[in-house]
Length: 205
Image (tube, rainbow, N blue to C red; front, side):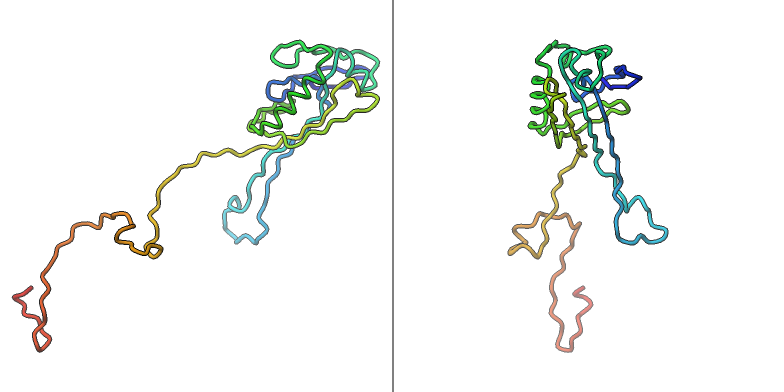
């Protein structure tokens, strides 16, 4: 859940999630979309799109999980978190074990190196990998999980495989190793030796 501050209250907004893990308190979400431009000069009239490409999207989420009311106290708020959430993953109630269980789930997602989906307050992302995790524990956050997770998008494309004939000069015996090529219909003619004067008798053609 995203956190919105209003006076001394902390309210929950639309749910954010990391794969199937519902974020209990989303403190900060940073989305980065960048385009790389080639450094060489571009000729006038050329397609500019051919000299630039989009880099993978990057998302940084600073979030927290904890037992009922503990997140509010860790954030220095005397009031309970409005709409406290205990259902962290697939509707399972985790109670006081929320920080440890969620941390284990995030570590498992990172170690798998498999693309996942994430949902922020503004956008849905697909094919994301966890590239970094940073956990902060101090006197305020010792009873909760306060973590920063970094995601980067993976571009997935579909490729096709085809067979290309090898170059003739790379074969020691191309007549035996090169594939057969259809060169069309060919007609043979007898070889006629020229006469002594170098002329060929037209009747032999």
